[in-house]
Length: 215
Image: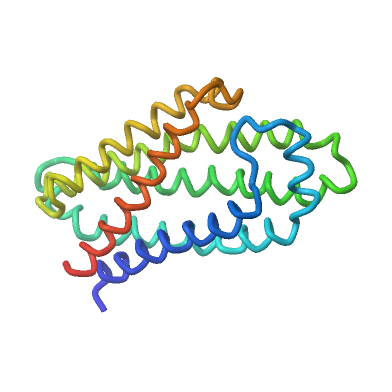
């Protein structure tokens, strides 16, 4: 099997993994960014098994995201090198950085599930760290979306509407990251900016994966 096709399968698998993880966590009542400490402590004290199940899928998601990025670079880099560009490498760097950042997010969730039943006093610091990392992660998602959208468009590998979806998602994610402090305080509907960007990101990467499979 061509490596580009492997990367495409990995992209679709990544999208499925993160959606499944959220379908496990969200119905249980995972607190939103900016939630009160008492709500957070109660959730993690009562739902340790749910947190563990949802977190179990994330190492797989990180591995799949890395393979997807490498698969995209394998297709896009040859023509970029001829043009003296490196947008696909920018996108791959964004994927790598979001993997590292999200590892910190999942670590905070696991720590909350471990400490909340016995030490609720640890909740405020851990949840603040979680919210900050979760919101700032939009920076790296934006870099990944921008880099691979520009590279794919310049190589005529993806369609204009697909690139446009990537640019819109990148803008939403980056805006959410820039407004991180306000988002963490739960002020108004600002949290919906990041959510909209995340939904667009999932659709974007799934479509990119299908394009790589057909390459």
